Length: 206
Image: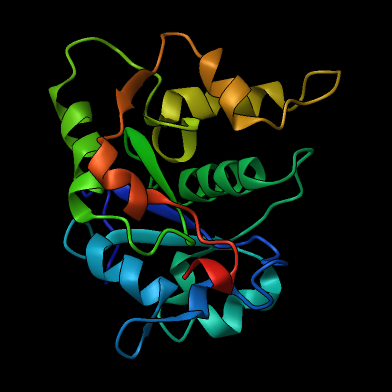
């Protein structure tokens, strides 16, 4: 898999501590001889060659068995935490390596059942847009879903600039997204897709 700057860029967020799961979510067994990482990669490989994984340094050896090391992105030393750190670290990495295009498509590692059409819908919406947008995200029954969405590089650039400003940084992706200008596009997640969109945090939810 050779990343390009013409394919959509996907970032899989895999750097969480997986405390409730008890092991790295990426390698939790699922289906026939597969795991969370394998299930998501199978879908994304139909859509792009530019797939990266955001993770912690101690995860590199495990993930490099499935993804080339140049596509593994480590958290940088940034004054933010949680998924925001993974997203902004990915932006910096892609920028430094001249791999940025118009947007970054973010997905969490713990939604292995997500349908390919659910992923594709956001791409189609971005391609059909007629006005500038700051991002494209789903709204489910529980609200705005920031961990499955398209973040434009312009928006991420503004966020990285704000890191140098004095004062407390906002870690909440929902709050950051809702304050974006121009307004992001929010798409209602079809009710029949909700069940496969759910984050799996423990083995009891499998």
